[in-house]
Length: 321
Ligand SMILES: Nc1nc2c(ncn2[C@@H]2O[C@H](COP(=O)(O)OP(=O)(O)O)[C@@H](O)[C@H]2O)c(=O)[nH]1
Ligand SMILES: [Mg+2]
Image 1: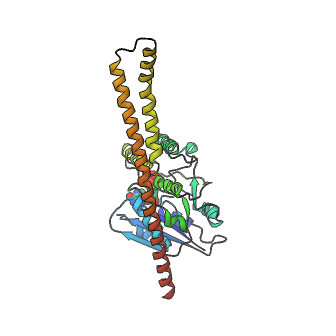
Image 2: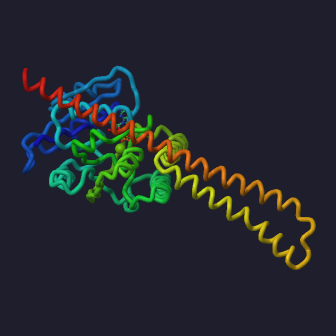
Image 3: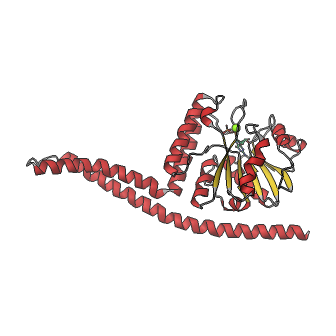
C-alpha cells in the first residue's frame, strides 16, 4: 500500500523544508511513503527547496491558478503515481506531520474514506481574533446549511482513500475545503474527524490576502456550493420563511373579517400576496436545483468511471515499461 503526501504550495520557501522533513517515511502497514509538491507559480525558491528537502515529485506550474485547482491536480498526480492513500497537508508548517499515521488509520482500515485532521479552532489561542471568529461563524453557517456534523471545515490536513480521490469534485476556484466536504456528503463518502494539534504560523496567509476579501470569497464560495449541493434545503428554507411572514397579514385580515372589520387593509394584503408568490417561486427554484442536481450526479458518475479507466490504463502501461 502506497501513501502519497501532497503539498500544494505558493511561495513557501521559508517553511517547506521543515514540513517535508517532518513527514514520517515509514508507517506500519504502509509499504511506501512519497511526497508530492505541486507548485502554483511561486516566485521564490520553493521548488529548489522542495527537491533539496527530499520531495519525491515536484510539479512546477509557471502560472498561479489558485489553491482549489492546485489541490485538484495534486490528487490526480498522486493517483497516477500509484497512491492508495493520499494525505494533503499545507506547506506552512501549521500541522504536525508526525500525526499522519493517526490521520490515515481509519482510511487504511476502511473505516472512512476521508479523514479530517481537526483542530479545536475555538481553543486556538494563536489565531488572530477576526480570523478565529469569522472562521467560527463561517463554520457555523456551513454546518447549519449543509446539515453536516460540526467539523473543523477549514482544515487542509486530510486523508483520502483512492476511491474518494477519484470521486471528489472541486466546484471552486478559491479554497477547496468546503466544496470537497459537500461533494463527499453528496456521494455518501464516509468522513471521520481525527483530532490533531496545530502550530502557530507567523508568516502571512497566502490564501487570505485581506480579511474582507477572504470573507467575501469564502462566503461566496460557501453560498454557491450550498446552492449547488443542497438546493432544496437552501431555497426550501427561504420559501418557508417567506411563507410564514406572508401568512401573518392574511391571518390578521381573516380575523378582522370574522369580527366584521374586513374592509380595507389592501396594502398589507398586497404585501402578503407578493411574499407568498416569492415563497412559491423560491420553492420552485429549489425543485429545479434539485432536478439539476441529478443531472450533475450522472455526469460525475460518468467522469468517475472515465477517470478510473484512465488510471487503470496508466498503471498498466507503467507496469509494462
Ligand atoms: N497552489 C496554491 N497554493 C496556495 C495558494 N495560496 C495558498 N496556498 C497553499 O495552501 C496552503 C494553505 O495556505 P495558507 O496561506 O496557509 O492558508 P491559511 O492557513 O488558510 O491562512 C499552503 O500550503 C499554501 O502554500 C495558491 O494561490 N496556490
Ligand atoms: Mg496556513
